[in-house]
Length: 85
Image 1 (tube, rainbow, N blue to C red):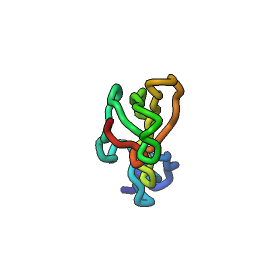
Image 2: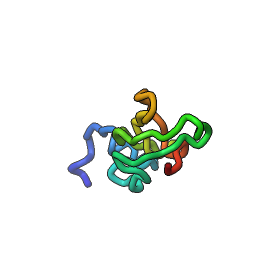
Image 3: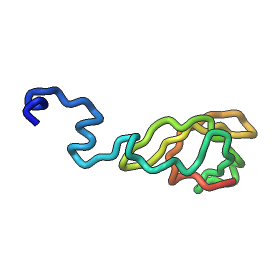
Image 4: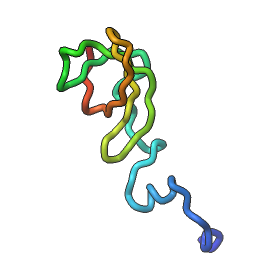
């Protein structure tokens, strides 16, 4: 323990100390790249494809980059805003 007496904490260490959840300890993402999803509030916009899984937040969960299949427009959404297509 005395070996760690005067060290600088990095973001991952601080997240664990303050009770946060780092990506290493996060739950598995609900969706994977290539999955088809709809926006919960706007299903009329049509299907989107998960382009990438960008980051995890203990407050919002997983964030995804999605692309609208009809228009090709990209967006960023958190997992709670999506439902399977």
